[in-house]
Image (cartoon, rainbow over all chains, first blue to last red):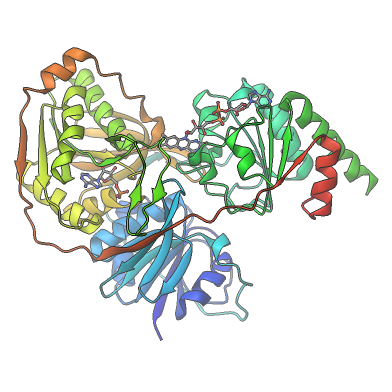
Length: 299
Length: 245
Ligand SMILES: Cc1cc2nc3c(=O)[nH]c(=O)nc-3n(C[C@H](O)[C@H](O)[C@H](O)COP(=O)(O)OP(=O)(O)OC[C@H]3O[C@@H](n4cnc5c(N)ncnc54)[C@H](O)[C@@H]3O)c2cc1C
Ligand SMILES: Nc1ncnc2c1ncn2[C@@H]1O[C@H](COP(=O)(O)O)[C@@H](O)[C@H]1O
């Protein structure tokens, strides 16, 4: 039976990884970098309250990973940063953003901003993978495994002088069931917050943005959705005033239902939308918010 | 100070990329090739460090076929002092690229390797940290700001939660994200000057083989066409019928 080391960076990752590890097939051990609750799998708990920079823990992680056939993590910026360095230490192949497994050494992942899917065949003793959990649905594994506290060696490297802090109370883009995103035409941070944030709050959802919105300073960096932002997979994605560039679409294609509100009937976003409304967002979005709120009251 | 900037030649990122008939390669009909946008940002960042700190030597390097000269000339026009083309038609993966870059780093001893976080075509998303591990150097990926103060790189980088600030001693490997800068427009004098700057072609330094190969490409799955709705009420009714709200 192959041995899988699942590296987790947050408390819910072991549960969302269950579909992927079941598909991969093997004996799962979780290396929990951040504090985590009980899991169906056996856990090596490094228990950092703040995960140190990748370059300071990568040799310690490599010493553990060496004994496994697969090292895997849910795709995130943090995971890619650490696992790519791990790939260098171990000299193992790494495939990022895996969306399908077509053999013990064959994996698929999107390339060229989602224009195509590449099948990669890897060779070597071990394989490193980051994967998109939305592509591997599955219910969390049952049972409770053991937890062993470990102390992971931290060596010198880069020094964090200011940590990133999550702002606000809205759900994380990566986990949100509903996302409302806005683009460049929102014009100001206030309007963005009022119109896009207003609908998101009515739906209990998260807020996303295009790069154009982020670059023009009306939405903050961590809200960017797309090839170079977050890859999201909500049940409902509402795009308001978003043209639908390939780079943006690369981040939203796994959404179950996509709604587009755009005043240009020829906007490419309509080609991927399940529901398309040609309208001025400054009228349509507040009206939608009002109708959603009314429904909530009626129920 | 010396900065090495690895440059990959990719399709114009705004071109429509499709899978070739044989399913073994990607094509973008009529599209130009460009410097990978993240590498262009790395070049710009290197030039800005020189403008801020004075004497900095910038060497651009690309690994691949002879056509990569086009992108290296552009890097020279942007401000690189010299360029190296490691000319090869061998299949490349990030293992091979990182090994070749490592050999160049050991030969040239740069203080910084400043590169892209990812190549927009293959989206390997790994060469920088791979190289850093091979060298045993510190790394900071996904930079949104960068300054060099007394042998220390002070950076801000994108994380899943927002931005963090990090400091690294040099030498180090740094990778760029989109917000680091806006690459400058290249004026004609720069292009003319670039023609006389040194561009060295050389063979590979290692015989390392790739450990990941492309079996083939498929077109991305398309979403079935949706429906147009004429009003917000119709939209709400549709979403309701789909169980989406
Ligand atoms: C390497 C690279 C990576 C990139 N990565 C990303 C990424 O991760 N994410 C991303 O989003 N982009 C990314 N981009 C940028 C991308 O190419 C587009 O430029 C960007 O997505 C456009 O954002 P937008 O839709 O907000 O703006 P625009 O393209 O300006 O579109 C605005 C849309 O709003 C409509 N509109 C205007 N006014 C109204 C109104 N009152 N009501 C309704 N509709 C209105 C217009 O018809 C238009 O369709 C990347 C680009 C590159 C080169
Ligand atoms: N063939 C190459 N020649 C030079 N640099 C490269 C090459 N391939 C990748 N790189 C560098 O590695 C970065 C990340 O690429 P990748 O890991 O393939 O997504 C790119 O932005 C380049 O800086």
